[in-house]
Image 1: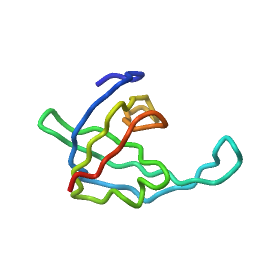
Image 2: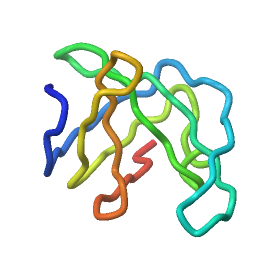
Image 3: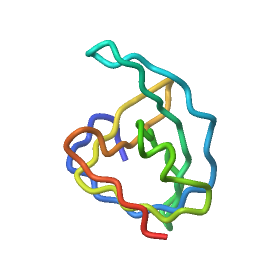
Length: 91
């Protein structure tokens, strides 16, 4: 995985999750974002969970990200479903 990739499809198991933190959206409203760590047979990667996804995903959840993207954040690659992608909780 490299930064700035698009159209990413992944299935991961969430193995760690940080406490959510607030952020301000472009329209001025407040939202929440949390960083989780997911893993599959190829390794581990950070996942950015936004707003409603923060409450849907727990440690141990199996998730599927469809049409996601990657970016570099604080020196680490993070993946996210973003606006155009989809995050499903499989188990």
